[in-house]
Image (cartoon, rainbow, N blue to C red):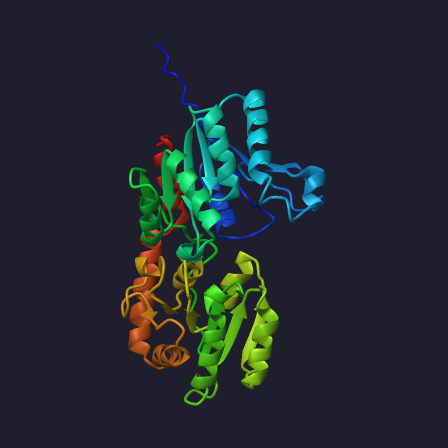
Length: 374
């Protein structure tokens, strides 16, 4: 008797997707590219009428919702987006047949559409992946309640760090939670020789939680002991003007380079120009930029917040600095710039950790397993 074929159809729901670039967007692209044999349909927002309503990106059929209402950014996607996702999902189910899995990225608006769909079509398993980098304890009450409702309806939650696993289990102690971190494309982020120059780098969106202001202040302190120390900041964001003023006020215009946003391919090249990677985060879901720096062969400095302790072991795979303390951060940077033996040990340990645990090929296989397609 012929075996019944496995239904390999997955519907992904996400508030944003390519060409917008963020942690979730890159995770979806890297995972789906490595899972041939599965049909992936994806519903997301349409932030601009210049972006097509449908296109194929890699292994994913991308459907964007919003249409003429997309110009009303104060309404879409935040308020009406879950409803738009819900109706588009029903349309796709009626056209192509049922999905085996509905997988929402982030317990936010897109997952709200999945929550609505679960009431009408309870058979597909409902998965949610949580990748939040914000301090979840400070989220608005309405958002907390919204997340609570979603976590009561899911069949499976994946999170990128143990910190986020604790948060989800607090919301629903009965839900099944798996820690599956984001990964690194080791073909793009290959080991490169460290720069001989005393150059520090951060790859960070310019928002308060990433502590870039603390890093700039630390560079002002560091220049007293290491006169040729420089900083490259890769990234953009709402704090750019404020940070430019800080750089000018601290007389660091010759020492700090604001490189702006860069593609992943260019980021690897910038990392190769540096000797130490730093991100003094105030909160962090995991911190993929750390892992990419470790893959390239940079020693890293971070704070013991969120998911960072999952991979950063002080003195072994990196150094911890105190949160919001530019003086302590300056001391840690100085240590890695001047102690070759410590720097070499951290580089070797970090590269091995990334290769053993954070390769996207390993991560994608874990998703194949939880989907039940292994």
